Length: 558
Image (cartoon, rainbow, N blue to C red; front, side, top):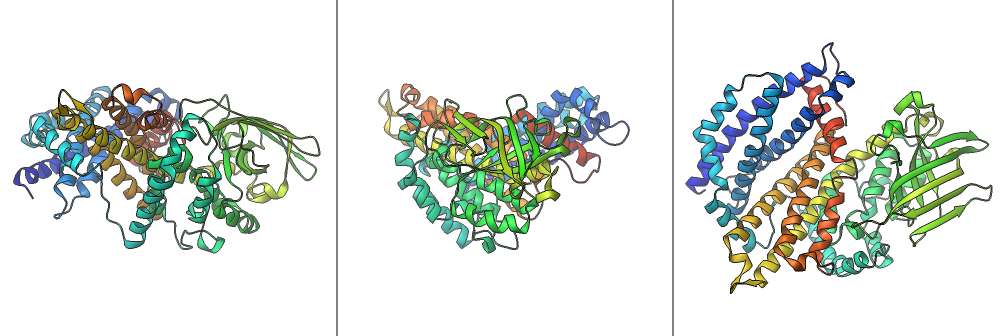
């Protein structure tokens, strides 16, 4: 290892240790402020939203930096080392003022933080992000063609990654531009080969016809496949796995044996395709306040109300619908999950009428990006769902919130993987354009500022994809529920940053709809909104979990 890089790596470890201790002190003090009588007080927690938001983002950057440094090995390639140190240097520079703000807010002594700014270790680490280091890292990222953030994989995972990257490049990418520009529904020319490759059964246990081991989950495989497909197209391929993932986990968590035997083989085969109907016009991410009503009737339940942002609702043959079976006062305990069957529609609107008079209508919401899957507004009018389609049967009535949350962990991990795929596509596009584009007689990629941009883009992608793979393995061990939300938080914001820089490097061509990088940019923007909006995740999941951990509470929010 280069002696300079070795010194910087040692300095990174010391700086991260200091920041971690300070972070834990801040989390403990904030937890005490929000829990004067033992458990967290919701009103006090809401009053500390600004501090909680800062805590969550400090946690994201800090964990990603710690993981980047921990991922290094004595034989790590120089590029991996440079990018890990660059990310860590910039993460520490971002985390330090966040924690200083928290210390001031909470009345804590900041001697250790003041000392860190003057510490030789901090100064040494900062040199990993100086002009010379940025140029060297950027040139290395360009030479590598954007292939950064390597993760050590066994043979089966490596083969799967290679296979789906090849499919994404050869089959998905050539169709992605037209699907986006013409706002088409994902065509069978993509869906059928993906069915044959087993994409829809990645989370379904082998005993039900899927590819997941019966004894445990394989979230790492899901992350690798999702990232590969998202590189070709977020909407037309990378997001196809999310909905069956969520429904599969909900059925495994609460479905009856009969429901599992009936639905899981169908989901694994991609027949029918499925969609998830949770969000409502007035409640967004506030699942506990949902109001779509399900009333008992002869033979089942009658659904009346509205849902919104139900992605792929037209094409789907079954909808996972969260509806209220109890009164509003029961909050999250009054929700149940229903499996609503309907015909598949290819268009942007549909009407499905039941023989008994029930009606389900849907209309696609025009969006700036994420075209191909289409998100729908849905209206249910006395729509009958049989008792057999209540997840968990009679015992599952009122437990829908818990079944839904069981599914969302995987959805958030997938969204982080989708973000990594979009980042990788944007970085590779920027490198290709930078090599070809001549500015003032010189290749754009050869300019120092371009190299600095490529370095920062590469460092952020590498840190996010390494963290996503690490957390996926934690989830498979039954851990990492909060971290799944945290990596989603970080990767989705990072995708906005990376795609923005990639578009900027393309200049006017980047703003043209015919350019793939313009699609990456508008697609990336949705990532911080769906599968749990950034603010909701930061406040209600990440910060709350961190404070509960500081209080020694088990079973932190997920």
